[in-house]
Image (cartoon, rainbow, N blue to C red):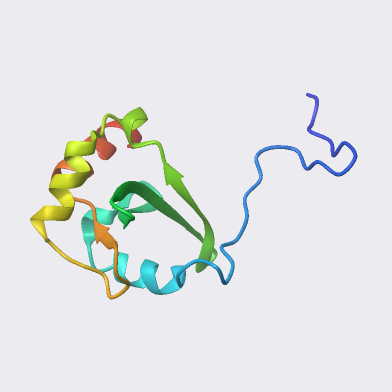
Length: 117
């Protein structure tokens, strides 16, 4: 089976990177996510981030007791609409200490579990 090789200065895909100092403290966010049992779906923690009136579904994948990587998820690919995200934020079922971060709603949790588990 062929394997991906580095060509010149370009790394093969996928490329996972650790969040750096330019982003919020993801360890702190992950700690808060653990308080919301519905945030853990499969092996990832899901949450909603609101920035400049834009809502995105995000996930954190822990590994070996640490943060492995973080990514923005294509919510539409998982059957989650903009209205679902807006509803989750407006329900106010929890707010993280970091402004603009919210747990997923029960409705979003159900959709993700059906697809991912």
